[in-house]
Image 1 (cartoon, rainbow, N blue to C red):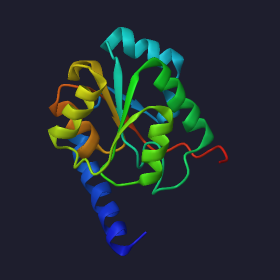
Image 2 (image 1 turned 180 degrees about the vertical axis):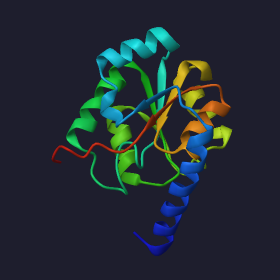
Image 3 (image 1 turned 30 degrees about the vertical axis):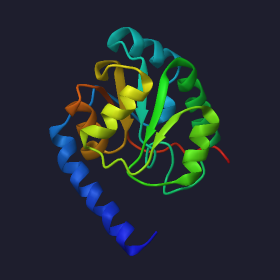
Length: 165
């Protein structure tokens, strides 16, 4: 990672600590794999969720690394149960190819927490914002952005890297 990238990461982590104290997501997970079939059923019944906007970096993978096998399984399960849209502030062509293979929408360079990427993702999924859940690790980008749109929000602490490639 470049020096600029490292500085940006430290900056975002510091801002996240401040914002985390002010924003409360609807749910919190250790990682994306906590969203299993039982949790999916709960989200559908309690919140009326029909789709998910998923952050990429820090939620699904770290810094353009591989996507762990267990995360791939979770994404496939989520894609069976919900409409899924990946939204990232970065540009990663490998993720765009992956999203295309799974039939998942993908938006790079989204500039979250702006409203536009959340509106576009909801529109692309054919859902009203209140029926969409935003899942991500960034309180300033993902949680704030989703809450500004009236979406259900889920914070993840980190990527699960416990399985091999």
